[in-house]
Length: 240
Image 1: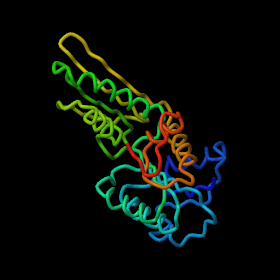
Image 2 (image 1 turned 60 degrees about the vertical axis):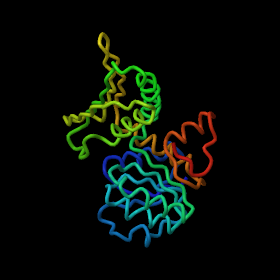
Image 3 (image 1 turned 30 degrees about the horizontal axis):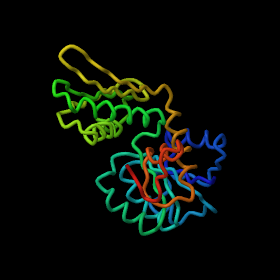
C-alpha cells in the first residue's frame, strides 16, 4: 500500500512512523509549506490512498485535487462538515473512495455503538436525562470535539429526543476522554472511553486506509467495522 500523507504534524508523523508495520510505504508528504497545488502537481508515483490529517480549510482544497487524480482518501480532520455535500458530489463524480471519521480509534467506534444502544433504551424513560463530557489537551482547537458531536448525533438518531448537555475541558496533554452519562431519580449510568496514546488514531487511520484501497463511495468507520466483522457487506457508497 502506497500512502500519500497530507499533514505532517503530530498525527501525520505518527502515521509515517507506523506505516511500515501496516505494510505501507509513504509515497509523499505534503504539509503547509507545499503550496495549494502540491497534490495536483506532485510526482508521487502510484498512490493507493491518501491520509489527510491537515486542517478543516485544507480538506476543501485537498479532496478535489485527489479526486482529479483518482486517489482514494481517509479524512481524519474535523470542522469541514459544512462542505460535506459538495465534497460528496466531487467524490461521486470522480468515482473515488472516501472514508471520513471524527475519531479513528476502533474502541471509540465500538463505544459509539454501545452508547447508541443505551440511548435507544433510555429514550423510553423520560425520567432519565443525558449528558456528554469530553476532555482533551490544550492544543485542541475545536470544542466540543468532533467525536462528542458524533456521539450526540448517534444518540439522537437512536431515538433519544430530550436535551443532551455537551461540555468540554481543555487541560494538559490529555489525548482524549469521552464520558456519556444517563441520570435518573435514584441512579446514574456512565460510559467512558479513554485514550492512553495518540498512536491509536494513527493505527486506526492506517487500518481504514488498507480497507479503503480499491473501493468507491463515501464511508464511515462503522462501515469498515461491519464489513470486517462480517455483519454486513456495506457495498459502494453506503454510510451509516
